[in-house]
Length: 370
Ligand code: PLP
Ligand code: COI
Image (cartoon, rainbow, N blue to C red):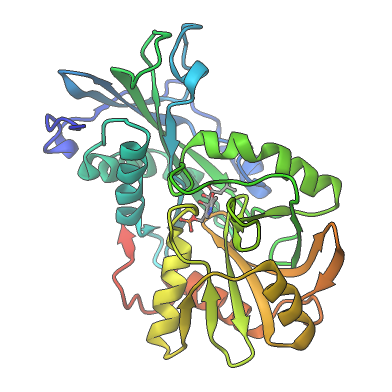
């Protein structure tokens, strides 16, 4: 589907309507002291509309506010919706940068195609992020592990109950100041291998970042929490043997020879930008990386024999978080001593230092905004 090209020079088109009643400096400072994850939001949002035959139109920066919806709005019934997640950071010189926003723009386009939605031009996606960061830069936490989490998303806004791709869409960006995703910060997490649920089958929507994938995973996540675990591990939907990914993160194994192993992108897992960054950094450092299927048996046996030394979860929200213990119907096992591994923490430091402008950016990933 064509995205329409009437936003060829997006920087010229955004209409800016500043929030007439922004949060006061004192209140914002109090909120930023302990933001948590996804609980508080900045003063503005971006909106862009789409209609078949017209393309994308009315790009706007406006006060963050509820979006009135007709009860027959298509997304409420058939979940035609996609989203992205990326972070903006304060740089050592006081400027602001995003990490690999072009990769999020490309993935947003892929998700749109899979969900039969019009693709937003990538330049417009990037400009929408620049706009919200510029107007809400005071919402970026200045804490060591804080950042402004950007959530671009789009949904079927047409009022129609027939089952077919909608003819009208709304794209928005909201911004949320965040600290660590897990309450314990980088403390190792425990994961639950669900025996009951799968996340994505071949031919399904596993590689798309669509809300429906997360809705379908909530029962599994609830099961994980009941078992005292922070995240759910999904096994493949066909054989129920191979590790796919976690509810909101990719997974990487560190072997006893120092190499990394991570499940391949076969269409059932999200192609994580953090995952890709780790692979590229590892290659650059001369570390071997294998993208291949890892069975749950290999994980359990490898943890017992010492062949698997460390395991970590990776994603924008989680950054790199060690996995210390694994629970399943069979019981629980630890990875090594259950603590944060050296390779995991080294890769985490390397990545965070690039993201925050404290280390050389060998791949041109840091996209300066201000
Ligand atoms: N897998 C899932 C299901 C996710 O929700 C995420 C988070 O976005 C990831 C993996 C990691 O992707 P990224 O590193 O691009 O944030
Ligand atoms: C992200 O890391 O951006 C995600 O979408 C994952 C979610 C668990 C917050």
